[in-house]
Amino acid sequence: MYPDYEKYFIKFKKGGQSSLFDNPEFQKHITENVMNSLNAIFDNLDKEDKLKEILNTIATNHSKRNVKKQQYETLGKVILEVVKRGLKESYTTELETSWTKIITCAMEHMGNIAGEK
Ligand code: HEM
Image (cartoon, rainbow, N blue to C red; front, side, top):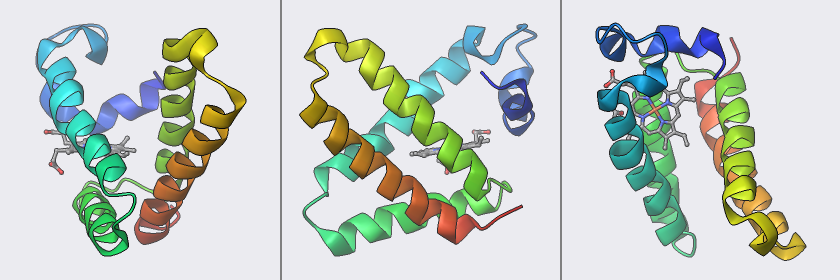
């Protein structure tokens, strides 16, 4: 993890762990909150209005935390790398193209709302 990003997750730093990833509360946050939002994005790919609403809500909520365009771009790259490593040989060129298109588009949309630093 980019150590710089740890500063955003003040709430999870209280556990005293050397890395955020060792904090069970942070793990729960990723597996529940973040993964649920990603699922909602994928579930609504064919519903443009709903999809925009989901992305706008995430971006607006995160703007209050000062999350900017660059951080969405970085997270997008991380997500794609995790999927690639997780699917291993099942990660076909076709899947890579689709995942890249969806994640890049979602991160760009949220990043444009968030704006540059
Ligand atoms: C695909 C992109 C992202 C998704 C789907 C996502 C999802 C979520 C969700 C569902 C929450 C809890 C609800 C809320 O408080 O808004 C949350 C909280 C949070 N997110 Fe994100 N997030 C994303 C990107 C980012 C990025 C790029 C950062 C910054 C590095 C970030 C930092 C945070 C922080 C600091 C919290 C609050 C944690 C707490 O103190 O409870 N998120 N995120």
